[in-house]
Amino acid sequence: MSVLTINEELFIGSGGHQATYIHPIDPRKCIKIPHTQNDGDIRKEMRYRRICASKLEKSRLITEFFGTVDTNLGLGYVFERVFDYNGQTSLDMKKFLSKNRSPDTKTLQRLWTILLNFKSDFLREKIAIVDADIENFMVQEPSPNVFRVRIVDNIGTPVLIPLIYWFEFAAEWKSKRYWNKIVAWMAENYPEIVPIEFAEQLEAK
Ligand SMILES: Nc1ncnc2c1ncn2[C@@H]1O[C@H](COP(=O)(O)OP(=O)(O)O)[C@@H](O)[C@H]1O
Ligand SMILES: [Mg+2]
Image (cartoon, rainbow, N blue to C red; front, side):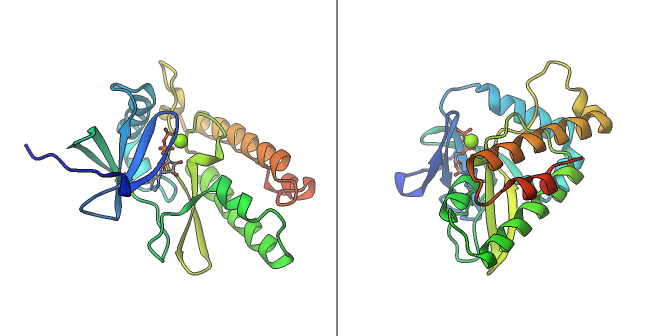
């Protein structure tokens, strides 16, 4: 069986669970290599993608999954890579907001539109996420000044009986709770971008 060779030049980023690389043959894809075999987060995500396949395949937020490959670094999980019109890997939401620490009026308007669109996608799709860590969201710019938020990590639920996978009302309740956690976190950490008045508008009622 053939083994894909990944080198450090392809490295994108790494968190607590996996390292992400650009796919050596197809730059529209990325490969994630878990730090440990049988990682709980990967199992959780794969169960979610299996049980909610038809919903997640239609999602605007969730990246496509293409299966596993053998690599020189071990078993890799192949996903759609989130990148901008210029070919660069998109920024995660934390870096994106940090880049705009003191926005002028026009930039602020643009940021608010991105966040309001993210809100409507998130509440419509009712994606299950495990925490409000905004580093797992990426802000994609598919063409100049067109922005779209994507969710790349930490989806699913670790609970034994995942009611939110089976019942839409449970998914809705949970997604609103998580959305409001995200809003509260941004209001606290980026008050110049999400001031109280805008936070109230952004909250899920
Ligand atoms: N689909 C993707 N496209 C482009 N970059 C990605 C993608 N998924 C993750 N990344 C980058 O790799 C980093 C680590 O990946 P992530 O899946 O969040 O791993 P961890 O579970 O260790 O947090 C992310 O913070 C992000 O910058
Ligand atoms: Mg992560």
